[in-house]
Length: 222
Image 1: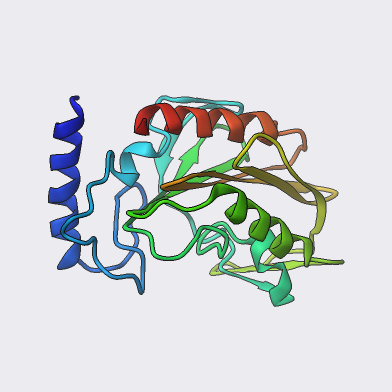
Image 2: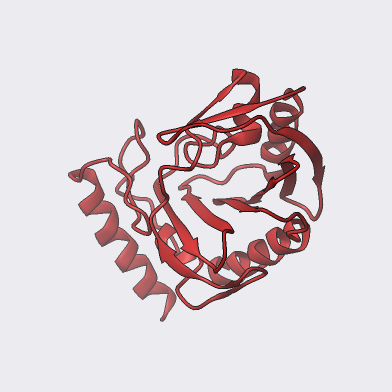
């Protein structure tokens, strides 16, 4: 689709969002809770929803099929210093003030869980600063961390790995003997992508995958 068509579609979405409910619906672009509507002069190249992984797209866990972000995803953590390390839904890592937010869980086969969220911004951010602040926040998680979800408390996990890869990519791992969650934050000037992949067996290649997804979004928003 031509660039001007994307811009027109984004303005239609933005206008609808001003009067819409702020409740997040998986796979649909919504206004971020507590954030103002999209300014009249904001022209987004593409919607947050369209930057999410789409049905049938390949992942390291197999083909993806979009579904809701379930009640087993953490919404808080004990101690609070581990919120940045454990949370996917409502993560404090993407910068505030996004113009659009979209999120989706995915069925990928077996017990594995995979999810993505995208925030799109009207104003460009410094990717290095976002990654640096994220690294500092995650590094505060020492010892055992308990994730809390609508389904209840999860058994304690520990920070197993934290590092940066390509420019604008932060990856880390929370683990226990029978369950591992790999997270990624991929940042572009006007887009922040959160990734979460949890499985009974370790080894999800988040470092490569987060960099690949960032490159895909970069091409689509160029």
